[in-house]
Length: 269
Image (cartoon, rainbow, N blue to C red; front, side):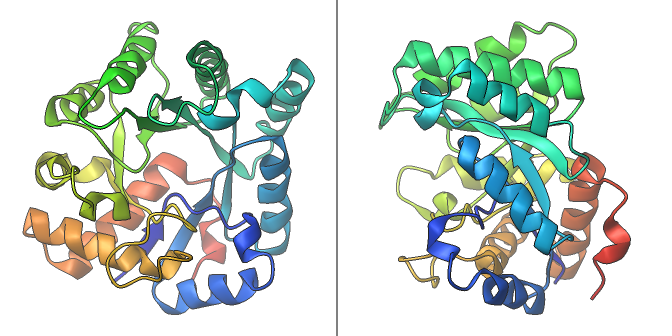
């Protein structure tokens, strides 16, 4: 089964000692595309340094809502500069987190808006993190409001590690978003993900690990790795009643259509 990992933090410190082995293991498991998103200024530079060594990976640069209060204007100028690099195929991850609120909500909103504007200016998709507190949907609703403010020309969106009700997914799909599923889909309280996986258009689905986080069943809880994206890919295919190999072909096509940069000749089995 051909695989992609559309969200994998390989520049995280949990991979400092063996990232080459992890990447090699992913390739052996069938993973052909990996997107390495950032969360703060340092991780933006880390993503590009990693891709300098492993050129078949792709990078995204941006500021996560958890770090929204820590990115000053000089730091943001670095992100804007890095976003012009051809190896950067997306902006993010960014978004809203009203669950843990590590940065004040007003700071999160200001950070989100400048990441969204950068996505529009560069023409690159934006990777959106969105979490509300248990039983709530305030972050999802606020995120939709921000996207709708762009009117008929919103940025292209990847809904990272989908979480939320079915009508939120419907609204995102109406805005043209691609929905990515992670190991979060297997957790209690995320049951709506199965219905979203079944109903989402075939050309707007991705899968991810969010490594080193969100381990799916069977993966080590201490550190998720990109090879385990196969568990989530099979789960999505089964929800949709699709052949695994055919679904894998579609995942690669979806990734390339949204994020492809012409460097795909370097990614061969």
